[in-house]
Length: 163
Image (cartoon, rainbow, N blue to C red; front, top):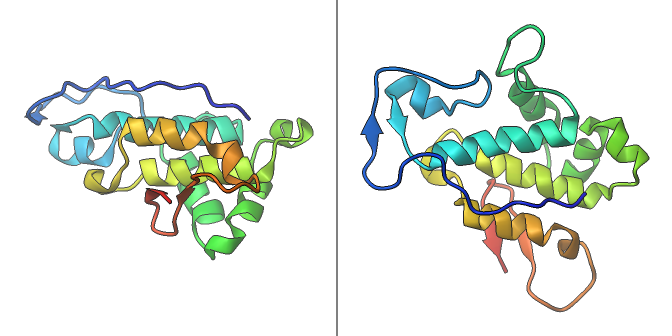
């Protein structure tokens, strides 16, 4: 799996804005926007986390039944919960069989799922920036290589950390 992304921000930068008119695709809208109408760049990060879930699972966030939270709830139940040392196995079992058929490294999939988990934090302050997301995904393959250089990991709290 090779992620090709760049820094992007669809929400306006600057001061937080409050709106009363909710617009967006079900399944991609950040919880803080639904509750408070709060618009920040962290909304984009949340939506990108949903896109990562779609890429790994091969499923749409807003499935045929229109339940936009179904994919996220499924990932939380089947992948994100449990011991951190078993994330790779859970991610491999959950991923789209097409990825498995393409010999996609389970470690890379686990890294992508870890980034998705970080992006999908309920608290926007806990979500990474898109710069951090891009950096971590660009290094996903190298994380699992045996080398002495800098590596990036997603720790058990869903935080992206350089080490």
